[in-house]
Length: 117
Picture 1 (cartoon, rainbow, N blue to C red):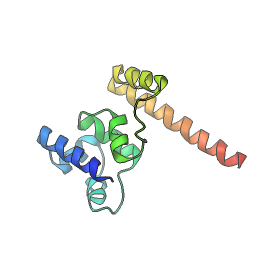
Picture 2 (picture 1 turned 30 degrees about the horizontal axis):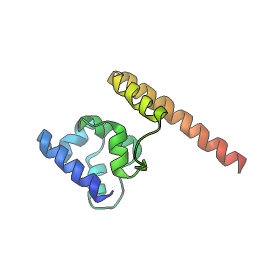
Picture 3 (picture 1 turned 135 degrees about the horizontal axis):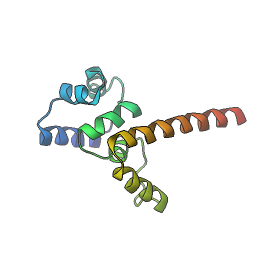
Picture 4 (picture 1 turned 120 degrees about the vertical axis):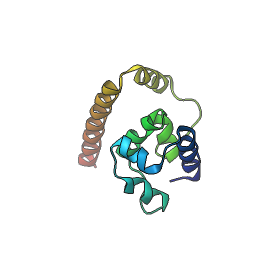
């Protein structure tokens, strides 16, 4: 995980007065997910990070960008900006549903790309 990610993570953790283990518990992920990332053994995966970001009161897209999963290219496209704005207006349950749908579609897209190669 990039240094910028850990600066943000620790700043949010201090701001919320919460420990790594409490973040993991509230996010519903194993504490080892965070500890392995801290020791550079294994980065925090997309799914775990999507659960951790709301605990840190941060949009998932921001956490992904800081973790290096989304390239920071300046201003987002109009479609991406609209998607982010609409996503933020959804309830937590609806956000989870949309993420589940996107994961299925992304997996299907990867499978189709693999078949055409």
